[in-house]
Length: 280
Ligand code: KIV
Image (cartoon, rainbow, N blue to C red):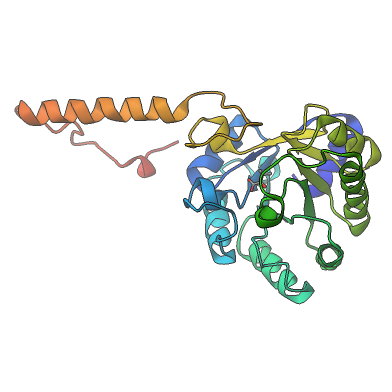
């Protein structure tokens, strides 16, 4: 799977599925679920590392997590989902050279085949053009852009006509700069529809209605694992509650067994192998 395949999918009307992953366990599940793209989103700063925004996560941490994501993929290379990694805050805002170095190090040292950047300010457009010229495919990100939380907050974007027009124009600029697709987050659905109809490259929505070329979701949100759920991303299951219940059961069982020890209580037996040594 290559970035250009997503454009082909749009041309043939095949809807694109993107799920986030942050380690080998999550990427292995996302791959088994059949997603087209694994996004190592900088949302891992909040979802996995416990920060209150996406700003603190570093380039080194994004590389570390992307490498782990790669180790979780097991299909033959040609069948593996495309891996895209977020360029974290300050890795591309300080000029083109620094951005090429940051994006290049992700592509050089992990399975990522593309990077994602937020916004369409003139400086960002310059960076995108340079990255694309250097052979680094770029996905854009418009609407709610969490790296700008201190300017925009987490509220829905594109609420008035002027803001909607700006998002469409930004999308056109991102396509012109060479992006192979764009994420559009938390905007009225008519904005995503307009953007989708205007652009040749796929528009992947999150909290932007169903009329997009594809959808992206934060896997931990879909599985109901996060303590606070974004309003536009309902959980499919109450994973947090189900996991806690299962673990509680185990804890209670162990306490019970400690109180009433049984003879020869090892349950692992002589043939026990840690799961990492078992055949798949
Ligand atoms: O960081 C992330 O997970 C993202 C998605 C919400 C699109 O950018």
